[in-house]
Image 1 (cartoon, helix red, strand yellow):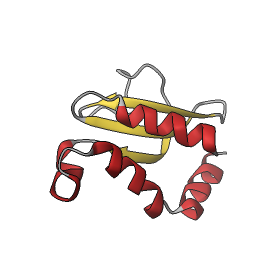
Image 2 (spheres, rainbow, N blue to C red):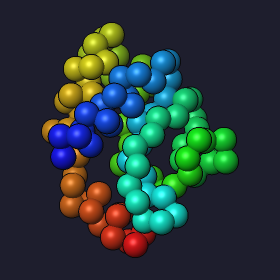
Image 3 (cartoon, rainbow, N blue to C red):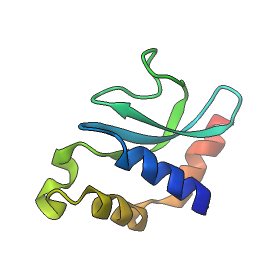
Length: 96
């Protein structure tokens, strides 16, 4: 889990400006982490790697500014306390 968490957080932290961090499933049933700008997502042809999202983190400033101001890393760390892993597992199994 630690390697995944680090990769996901890095995708969120390094997204410059508005965007998203994603955990998605590719066409072969493999999980992958990605980051997209603005309104883009892994379902779109404009992304580097396509897949079906099962978890995402909104890193647009409006998502965290009221509570975290410019402390995006704190917002990203707090994200893990609200993830519903049973739902993520259900989504993953539904795709398989």
